Length: 185
Image 1 (cartoon, helix red, strand yellow):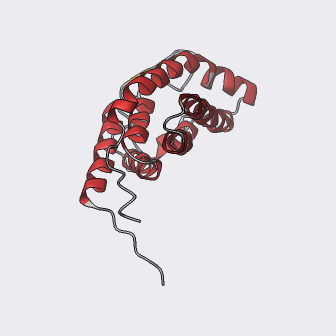
Image 2 (cartoon, rainbow, N blue to C red):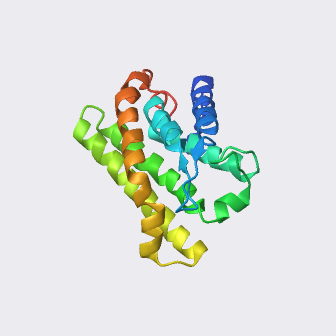
Image 3 (cartoon, rainbow, N blue to C red):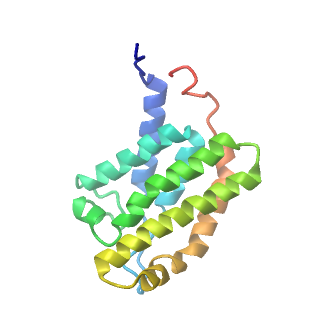
């Protein structure tokens, strides 16, 4: 017999709040001249979600953020929205956020007391996001993969390190205190 899973009001509220944080931080961006990909604060919202929620719920929050932006609400970088943003040159990074959420969230949930593994989760999550985003950028912009990595990855590494450090310091302070999925599964 298959057991139905229901989300409690507390879980839904936390997912909605984390999605709202992504929608608030996501549009805040700094365009850079050498790349169609702006510097964005979306990752901070994702990092806060993976600390505030268990990674499965953080994934729901990230998917909702992408869905909200895809239907046209201006929650993507530069206060943009629409399916064209997801299908355009920066769309691979938006898809990469799904994997960033999964990887960093998994490492935070599984190895919460091991700072080295959490740092590894941040690094791996970002690398996967860079790979997906840069491959999509190369395809959409008709440029070489090397060029895509140069313009779509390397300029962002210092800022992404800063965002990761902020999340690493602030995240444990917002770490969920009630394990919302223990009673719901």
